[in-house]
Image (cartoon, rainbow, N blue to C red; front, top):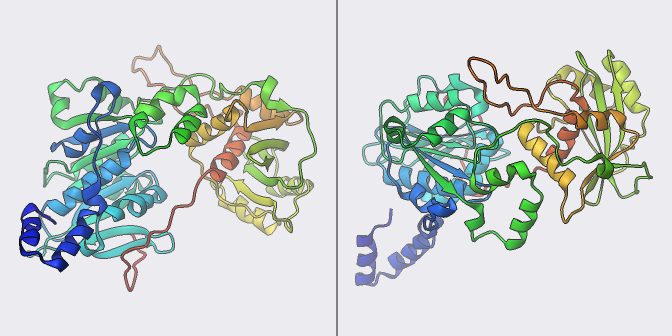
Length: 473
């Protein structure tokens, strides 16, 4: 690491080579990143989150693009580069909701902050996608080193058992059992600044919200500190993006997406849907439109296929198939009765629930190849809601009047009810009621999956013989 003495020596000796190296390092993001000054009255405390040295969990509650992830990555990079590792191969856990998300954390954030000179080796979880399983930093003179260990919450709590780690970074909302299990892995070490949690709480998090509400309590204050980050104060964002993005959001998500306020849900899901506006008479789909299909399998409920067209930036659900008590073969035959020209480039993907791989395989053999969608429930619902709302006062999702079941189910799509008379009050649910929701699922598969961006490939340290195995596996 660069210190003040090295800078002074370089200037005093007028060492051209050392001065050049210093210039490269001092223009590196690790040294140029400057957290925003705190403005607690405006829900922005990026500076304190980055610089506070606290032995408990530092929680950054921020809006979308508020700078919480970059601030957390900077905090992690500085910690592992400045704190001597206590033993060889000491894990520092970096976790998020999916391997795609945790891979993006490395590609877009951490690898820009940790110079390749500090990296000893990388073991890849997926070479093609450039998802690391682990990144080992250079060992010190005692042979001790940090290992950034990348994991997904989806692997479950059990994956963290028997680990002795020196720190962790939890990115985005984590299940409570995962938080407690990972914290339990810190039993051998208690470094200040080693426990980091950054999130936009898009779903209810009752345990975390209770800690936030009672953070003045002595026991909570000793273990948890909360910092707010306000998207509106992130000066790196363009005014045009900010206005258009927040204009497209459902009203009940504004405060969550802006300042990291805890999400609350109840009642009807698609409040933005207005039958007088979003239901239109059928018309001939333009030739340049892109076509997609969404499938939700039917076993104990109806099987559904939706045909959807993307005309410029606007979606139209133009046909539906709903079949009850049907066999896979009958369902496939009925789908094939509707024209689908595989030879034309405007006919795109068919997204089907991968919970039934046998049905997907059978459909493929019958001439209906299917792709796995992004099944994120709350994010998917938000994607659909944003299309119903649209931009500049114009919706970007319409449904043909002949799709009667789709219209009916969207109007009745609600979240699970809460038994407010129960002795042990259940927090409000963020989950949709699993009843009469088949077309809503198929719609969400197409809209949300096609709205995702591909993770950018990372160009940096490579390993001659990459290891595809999971770290610790």
